[in-house]
Image 1 (tube, rainbow, N blue to C red):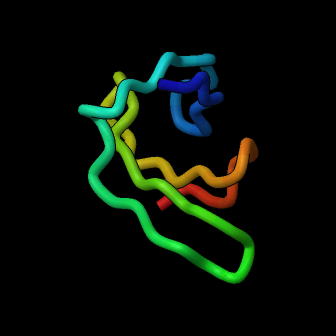
Image 2 (cartoon, rainbow, N blue to C red):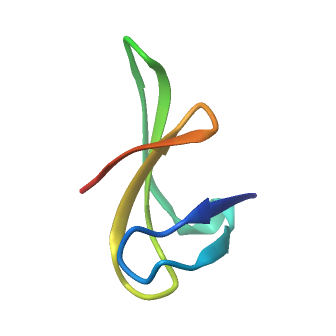
Image 3 (cartoon, rainbow, N blue to C red):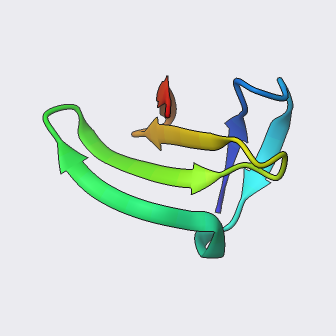
Length: 53
């Protein structure tokens, strides 16, 4: 689990492993895709936000 600042709802949210929809390795490191509690699809990696999906 980790804390993520959602770009859609602008809240810090606790993200649980069950919320992950994808994990992949990129040139920047590991990237995870998940749905925030607000319903927004988010992408995060290596302790920082990479983009909003």
